[in-house]
Length: 443
Ligand SMILES: O=C(O)CCC(=O)C(=O)O
Ligand SMILES: [Fe+2]
Picture (tube, rainbow, N blue to C red):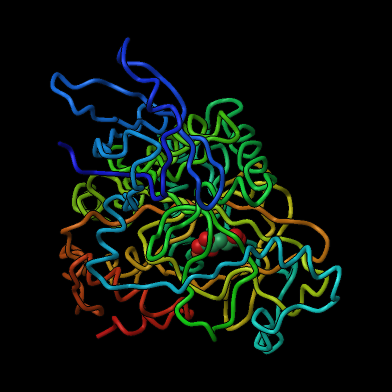
């Protein structure tokens, strides 16, 4: 019997008594707790009874076996373990534990209309401490043109521009990335629709206790900690065989397909950019790409509700990304990303249709500090919701992360060498506090 089980709920089997002929057949089961959720199931009959129920959430989800004792609605129910996939296994190993944050920030935002006050746990006194620059001269985020990078006539010049952006800003906007037709429109529409569903429906893919994937919150380590003004949907999107589709929304019905296509486009784009970066750094492309073998990718979809007291809350605490490279897509036209430059916060004006690309901690370490992983945060709009998709390209498991040998010829290593699990563990334990973790890696 196969042992992997993905449904993290108590199940009831109302149709079980009707089984008997015509296998395989499709029917629906529902979960009693905590919500009435429908799951599709495929039932197949084993050569010898008892029958095994093979659950396929939605093809091509991995199949899981429920022991035959569950066959009748009268039998005792069995608490099932959620399958969070490889990523959760790593988290388990690392002993990184988030505390449950059981309220949706969107619901909190709705309630403020009644009380008029932001709950104390979301009030961030530190926001006012640092000046913010909006539209200042000389503070234009570099714009990189993908079509020029790929055109032999202009690629050298554009590559140099990209290199300078990675060294001086750690961020740039990528235009002309040539995504297929309406894909960006589709992903934007599907994500917006998901977040506009009633809370009960979003909870169908809730992050389980000690889980990492699904709808909920990350980086909450204590009941006292101040909270970010955001609800998220986090999914490990690549490699494809490591997806836990149970956490992929089925509403809207096009969500999974759109996400799959978007994920592939970004993965291909990440390879193109890693290659350009290798050229710019003067290192072997394979040496750089080797760290990202298998192209692990995850997505954090951020839903920032509006807040009438927006200057009291923070959408996302100052942090660097603990990965190689991140692509940020603004799903609607509401701004809120700020990056720290020269000790001040600088508001990013996203070009419509562009992707905001930023260097993560891993690339800063690999390049021995030549490329910069820059601190950034998200602020809240007083009247409009803001939605973004951050797509992270991470290191492969089993890799070591340290300055690339080819870059050391000119000087000493400035960062420690760590195994990828150690590295990620350290990142999460540092609790999203600016550049604290990255600084701790310096020799
Ligand atoms: O939503 C944003 O503007 C920033 C998101 C981000 O930095 C992240 O998810 O890591
Ligand atoms: Fe980030």
